[in-house]
Image (cartoon, rainbow, N blue to C red; front, side, top):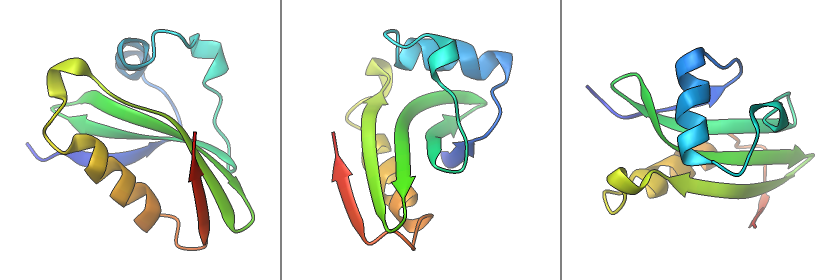
Length: 98
């Protein structure tokens, strides 16, 4: 199965479990999404392997909490995730990462 990058707009029960493994410091209620606050994730075999939070404000974008699950690191998943986030937001001309 192919690794795909998706924008999470609604969380399935499995997504919540996977996000808790990716971000154990965040409670599920803190992961709210809307048009300006987004979560992008890397999915493989119906499981989330990595995620990043994206905040948009006009032509500016902020990336934070980029994390790849430990068992999947050093395989280019994080780089692919970032490349796809940038590609999917062409109206953003200035990015910063926290």
